[in-house]
Image (cartoon, rainbow, N blue to C red):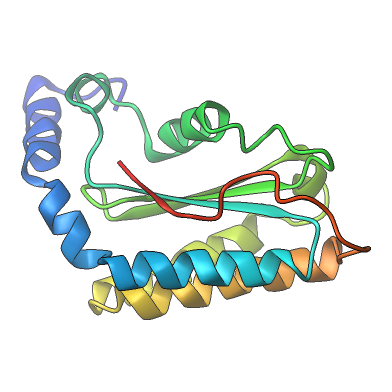
Amino acid sequence: MEHASFGQRLSRVIRHWRSTKAEALRAFPEATLAAAAQAITAGEQTHRGEVRFIVEAALPTDEAWDGITNRQRALALFADYGVWDTEDNCGVLIYVNLAEHKVDIVADRGIDRKIDSATWQAVCRTMTDGFRQGKYHEATLAAIEQVNGLLREHFPANGSRPNELPDRPIML
């Protein structure tokens, strides 16, 4: 949105203003958040990765106005929540922006060397396709299982290890 017109910027800001926390909680109720946390915890017993799941109803107004992309926001949250700071460099962030109807996955450098962007895009499509059908719970769990499967394949568990990042999803 770097070269967006005033009208495009204003339209985007209004879209983000209209996307409320209450709507996010309807899409991701406590049962879905608890199931996502459980799926992350169970998956992390089978691989060396660390998975974080963040749902954001809308960008902060200044970021929506400035044209911050979904990817840029995901990268910032990846840094802010320390997903990059794992012992094996194998953190993965699944970021959902409800106002934009977009999902981004950011993988740390250890994972990024082994799993290509097309594979991550397929996981994102699992979520966005499900979300379009109103199946937030099912699509979220399916995507987390896909991520766990990829991490099991490329970073299988090699004994017990500490849980480096919280498994509970974050609602912004």
